[in-house]
Length: 160
Image 1 (cartoon, rainbow, N blue to C red):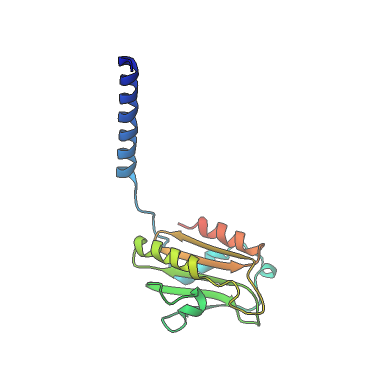
Image 2 (tube, rainbow, N blue to C red):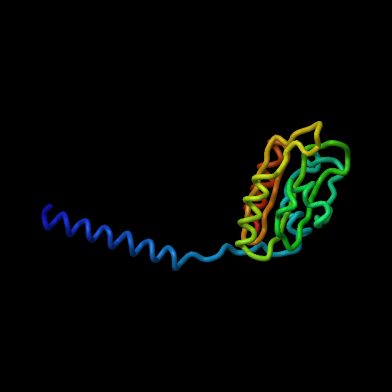
């Protein structure tokens, strides 16, 4: 190997190392979404026409006794959680907001929810789409139809 090739390889390795080091030191934790879960839920549904939403949409607090029914597991560590579902019959629609103590717990919650969410929890109907997304210390589980789910996902993605 010539001296010129050796210098080129050495410079390339140094550049890659510097870029990696800079990337690690400039990474910041993702910002948390501000507001109460009720306020955030309103923003998730913002701009969605009433006729696109399930009938009698209602919010309910999630606690240790009912968490498994909404997330498919009780093995999610959370600070607070809220679900939005239809109060009428078997409509395959559920939006759950889960706020964790910190971003690390939210990452773990996201993985657990993704692995356990049950789009057939209504037994006679099935959600067409299941989305689990994390933003800072907040995780959202969207189980709904293929028209509404992407709109809710986009609204959640735009939250600050």
